[in-house]
View (tube, rainbow, N blue to C red):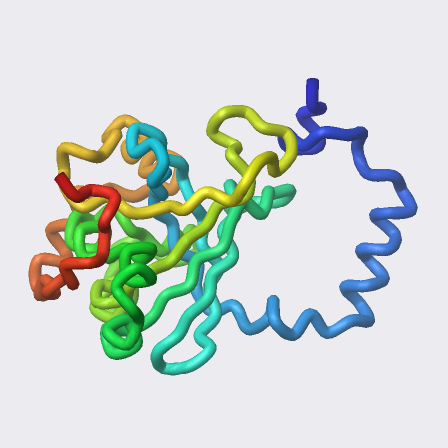
Length: 218
């Protein structure tokens, strides 16, 4: 059984020499790509291979250009956290240049934004003030398409990233959502999804390409 001190990861706790190396590296190396991260988003990803399964995902995102973002996906917002996947986000302009089969691998963010489910946790700023900035960012995110793969199935208790990468997607309707998970997430972050939904009523919905969200096709 994995030790609690290693956050569900197989193996013994880190040695003192590892901690010393981390301190030294932090003081002398640049970590440029990591320092370029400019946003923390929290939502839920759904397994395309089994839409009954979903997992909470903490996105740490970098803007590579006006049309492309890349996000590291962690299972938790605190250390130690497991890197469980990656997500790329692109604008509709780029999405429409992709071929049909490629477009099927991408998902929309319209429902996540307008339902209030997609949040930007910030315990350092009062919710009322932060929601203004968060809502402005959601106006940008709502039109983006995401392509996400998870390598580590932490929801089934894996202590290592096992098997092939799993293509993930997003929820697109209320009836798909495990609202108990959302409630638990909200309580841990001191937010209310319903309040955010209300605050975002002024955000116009976007027209979603017919090839996106293919997991939910009936």
